[in-house]
Structure formats: C-alpha cells, structure tokens
Picture 1 (cartoon, rainbow, N blue to C red):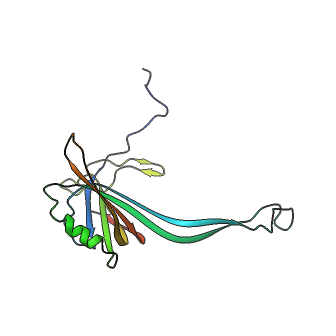
Picture 2: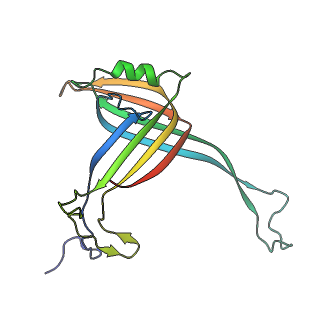
Length: 184
C-alpha cells in the first residue's frame, strides 16, 4: 500500500500532556483572571564589527577579515491575553501592581509536561529512545522567571459575533531566568 504524504518514515516516540501550568506574581497566587495566551521574548543586542584597517589582504591573517561580536544589553517583552469574565475580579489589582513603574514585579511561569503516573509511580507512556531525541519519560517541570516586569500597554476588545471581552497586556522586563524543577 502506498503512503499518502510520506516523506520520511516516522516512529511513535511517546506522548505527553502539557496542560498543567501556573502563572504567579512574585511567587504568590494572585488571581489573574482567565488567561488564554502568554508569550515571552528575551533578546540580547549583539553588534558585529569589522576592522576597516584590515581588508583581508594576504598578510599575517592569511586573507581573512576579522569579525568581532560585541554583546550589548538584554531586554524582554511579553504579552498576556485574558478573557474578562467571572474570574476577572482582580484585573484592576493586576493593573495597579504591574503598571507601577516604581515597583516592578517578578512573574513566574511554571510549566509541567508529561503523562500522569500510575499507582506504582511509573509513567503510563513507554519511553522510546531515538538517538538525540528522547520519548516520553517522567513528568518534568520548568519555571521561567521574568524579573523587574512592568506593564507598558493595555488593550481591550470585543467582537459583535461572540461578545467575548478580550484583554491584552504588554509587559517589558529586564531579565529572564530558567529553572529546571525536575520531576513533578
């Protein structure tokens, strides 16, 4: 039988769930409403510079033009998209906490992936090793902490079709850390 869309044979490497996540402000469970989407971006400025006095002539460098990387400042930004609804009672508190440039906050995003463990404590999905990739194993957690975070923009929209009130918050932050929390 001929395969449809076959470009390369694939093998099942396991499965996992990634629906366990928590978002906290400074480690406390401040009510954040109905969060629909979180996006974080952390970048570093890197300048590439060349020596204009060395055009790559066949001198001591052997015809190679030297290039230098100069690391600059880091900067981060993020967005949180929420729906205004029955769990949105603390939105104004969030704006007051996160919108104050004089008291930037740390935000913690904790994500857990993996399948639930059975009664013996073993993972319910068999792990399959594929060389440099690893199939499902024990549940693991990772935490991203964005530091010195402040809200820079607030947008609210509603569509006539569904009448869902959507809110988008844009954040800026100074630093990001990643912590492997290990098996959950």
